[in-house]
Structure formats: C-alpha cells, structure tokens
Length: 485
Image (cartoon, rainbow, N blue to C red; front, side, top):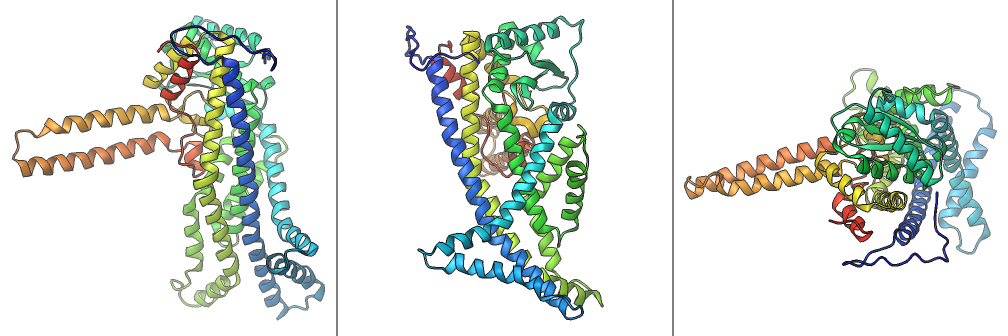
C-alpha cells in the first residue's frame, strides 16, 4: 500500500485543535500491534511448554500402566520399556538436575519434544487446510451473494471498492453482499490478492457514498496491512490448542472421540476442502475448548454409579487413566486460565490496535476522516454482528460492542425511569418494587448482552475482553486525525 518515507515528516495540520498526522498514527499503531503480537506469541509458547510438561508425563505413565497390565497376560518384549524409562529419567533430570548441567537442558528438550511435535503437526495440518479452504469456506459460512447488476447501489459499491484498491495499490477485491438486519462490513481471505469484501445490504441503505467509501477503505487497508493472514494464524492456533486438549480427553470421553473423528474426516482425510466444513470444524473445536467439557472426565471417574459387573470394569478403567485424567485436567485448566487472564487481554489489545491502524489507513486513502467518523456514528446506532459471521467477528469493521453500547444506554435510561415509577406508593412498598424492577432489568440486560456476544470468536475461546475498541474511542482518534465531531 502507499506510504511515505520514514525520513519525510508529514506537515503539521493547522486548525483549532492539535491534530495527529495519519502517517504518525499508522506508525504508532503498527509498532504497538507488533509488540503486542510478540507478547502473544511468547505467551502461547510458554503456555504450550507448561501444558506439555504437565500432559506428556501423564500420557507416558498411562502407557506404562497399560503395558504393565498387558505384560501380565502377554509376553511383551523388554524393548517397549526403554523409551518410557528414558523419558521418565529425562523428566527427573529436567526438574531436579543441577542448574549448571548441560544434561538438564537436553533433558528439558526431551521432555517438551513429544508435546511440541504433536502440536506442530496439528497446527500445520489445520493451517494448510484453512489456506486450502480459503475464501470459499468463509463465504459459504456467511451466506454471501453476488452483486445484482441491475441494482445501482450495489454497482456503486463495486466501483467504490475498485477506486479504493487503486489508491491502496492492491488488487481490486471481490465484493459480496449479505442480506440481513444488521449493518456491518468485513473483509475475508488469506491475503490482499484474494481479499473479499463482504457488506451487509442494510449498510448500503444507511450510509451515503462517502461513508461507504470510508468503510471500504478501512477494510481494504486492513487487508493490505496483513490482517487476513494474521487472522487465519489466530484461528489455527486456537484450533490447535483445542485439538490437543481434545486428544487428552479422548480416552475418557465419547464426545471428544466423536469430535476428533469429525475433524479427522474433514481436515486430514479429504484432499479438497469443502466450503461447508469450515464453520462446522470451527464450531466443533470451539465447543471442545469450553471449560464445561471437563465434566466428562468427572463422569468418567464416577464408578460409584455403575452396577453389577460394570462397576469393577469401570473402576479398573478409571485407575488406568487416572494420571491422564488428573494431569490432562491440570493442563486444560492452565490453558483456560492463561487465555482468560493473559493471552485474551493481550490479543484483544493487539486486535484493537489493528482496528486503529485500519482507521488511519482509511484516512490516508480517502483523505476524508469526517466520512469514516460519520459512518462509525451511524454504525453505533444501527450496526451489529452478522449472525452467520459471529466466528469471524474480528474481521468486521464493528463487532458486538456496538450492540453492547446500545444495550447499556437503554439499561441506564430504564434505571433512571425507576426513580419515578412508584412515586405514589408508600416508602417501604416503593423501595421493594424499585428493587424488584431493578433486579428484573439487570437480569434482562445480562441476557441480552450475553445473546449479543454468544457464538462470537471471543466467547467461543474464553476471551472475555472485547476484541474491538469502543466506537467512541475510535471516533475520538479520528477527531485527532482531523474529523469534526
């Protein structure tokens, strides 16, 4: 995309307020997002290493128990024990060896190697499959359609996208539409060369040409800044974590085994990616990532409920997989807590920085910060997540934060009305009714808020921090770039 040389400082913009040149804003947000991305990568590596330290010995001990039981009835060769004994010796050295020993580093590599290899193989398979699925799988999941040649608004949208692409110096994106109630727009694909801009038909009805151009410039700028490949990487990393955690549950959970079979069928066994499978695999793996799946391990270890001959068989099975159940559960808790308190907030900050960067890029391409500010103001009142695209919410110009802001404003207004709702009632009765109404409003607000975020990428993967910055902050940043409030 077009840019200015680092040595050429953009001129200051005169005006009644101190403004920030968009080149400076781009450099600041790009630098901040790179730092946050590096922190996210380090967090993922540390989390994966800690999970491997917990989970891999559990798998080895479970295998040792199984081989020991098999030796009671089968003449198994002693050579089967050598890798297990070697691994357990290395594990002991890595944990309790002398700090200065070179052998301790080698032992740590041996301890981490199995988990790292499994995770790397799973990630490469998912990454290759996502690239092969490309835009077609995402378009199918969104239910997008081609532009109607006879619709002037839709023809104008294609022209606007071509103009913005020329200004950005990239290939003109494919433009598709989604018919729905929410006004929104996003960009999907694997690179700027195969980017597809998906626009809700309502957005065309709500915005004028300049505002639509600003929205498209934001999306094209986001693709040119490399956000599409980063989004696929983000999806593949979370799916890899989900597959690894499901593998730990598989010996004890029938739903986990069913999920692995489905992922194996759709990802590994098929040569050509079916577009209909992309969202299905994302949903299955997101469900397995949920903390609620640990209940399956609890049910597996509950042999008290078994009757007759099934009780001793279930007890023996529980004893066999007890190390895997305990350490696998610890690994899952570690991953979930890390995502909740460390990785999730860092990732949200990085994605917010990318949104600010795309806003500044749109200002560079259109030289019209007012148009983007007006568009965001309209989307604050009418925007929302496209239902079929909730798992891709981080690729759209606005997310569930627009709905949350409207719900919060409506809730605050309803609470203010409670002050006079029961003014004629006696003091005690007025206080009781006000408390009951406030509790009901809080419950209804919570349900609507949860519904607005349900099924989104963040909630599917245990991220409780919003992936989009608030629209008020984005408009304030645009004001610093020259937009009139």
